[in-house]
Amino acid sequence: MRRVLLLFAALAAFAAAGAQPAGRAEHGPDRETFVYAVRDGDSLRLDRYPALSSAAGARPCMIFLFGGGFLTGTRDNRRFLPYFRHFTARGCDVVSIDYRLGMKRALDAGPIDGERFPGVLASTLAMATEDLRDATAFVCRRAAEWGVDPQRILTSGSSAGAMTVLMAEYALCNGDSVFVRHLPEEFRYAGVIAYAGAVYDPSGELRWATPPAPLLLFHGDADRNVPYDTVPVPGGGVLFGSAAVARDLAQRGVPYWFVSEAGADHSMAWRPMREHFAEIDAFLDRFVFGGERRRFETRPPTPPNGPRPLRSTTTSTPTTDTMFPGKNGSRPKHSEKDTVNENDPFDLSPMAGRRHRPVDSGTDARRRGAGLLPRGAAARFPRSPHPSRSKKLKDFLN
Image (cartoon, rainbow, N blue to C red; front, side, top):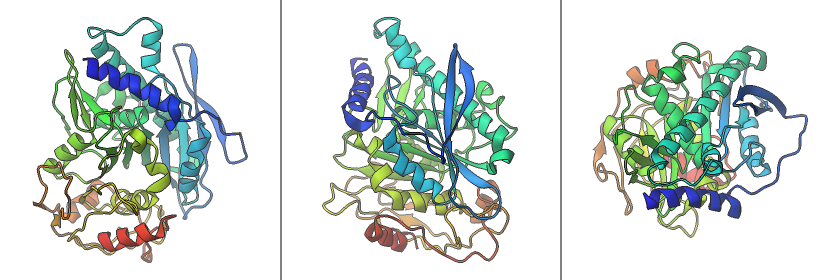
């Protein structure tokens, strides 16, 4: 219990020390602010950053949640702007939201001891996921006005925000009535990007009643703030970090990409938003909007020249002419073979060194990504501010 309490205390300390530095972005012509819900007397706001360019038709939208241990943080931290602009420049709207900081509220009410902690953790996560649900419902209601495709809404979060986006996907997959009933019928997120996140289940087991959306997980194996693997919560279930989630998804044959950095601390909650655009772009282009069902694990050692992706036997021919193509049209043509995790000294997956069973691409076309790409689109790998790594990833994926 002491370890879990220290984890959340460290989350706040890390945020205050610079992971989520203070300083709010100034309003500009490219930002609109809305109240999306009123909870407990507080107005919850979101900032919308419209896409700067887009293909014909409705656009995708990324909903972002800041981090801070559910104790601190703001939706309009200026350090997020380059990340937001990366998306808007590629034809995707960005929505950054407030959410209630349950851990802060609990601490304001008194000390959190071992007996009280499981209930505080559960209520904190419930608050945050409910707020994400309400923000998602707000975006869906405004979709026609904003030119957003409600079938292509993805989520992204840092630290506590990463936990929240994973918990929201978990709730959707398990048919949580409180979560589902406020959203359009059969709503699903198109993809999830989690920077140092975790899933909490009071039963102590990961349960996915239906397969989740494609997940991109970033985590450092020296993270002392959010569990990298698993941490039992005495008297109240288990926190499953990215490594545990990736293991579980690999066994289920669900598409995901896990970027695990050896020796990296909780800076993986924010550093990939500056340094890993190549991986992010490839994930969105190929997994989310391309509908490909593959499982990748990038586990570079502490690198002198940046992360090194694993080699893969998978071959594929991309057919997108933009990172975020229009909805109407054909899917990309690609073939899938078994993938092999090679050159991976840090692989914690039970499937390390073994061939992953391929998933039938025809079945996947009907599940996610069907009809998302324009007909006759020419192949192009997304541009990256890290051209050398982008080239390696292109070779790796193709």
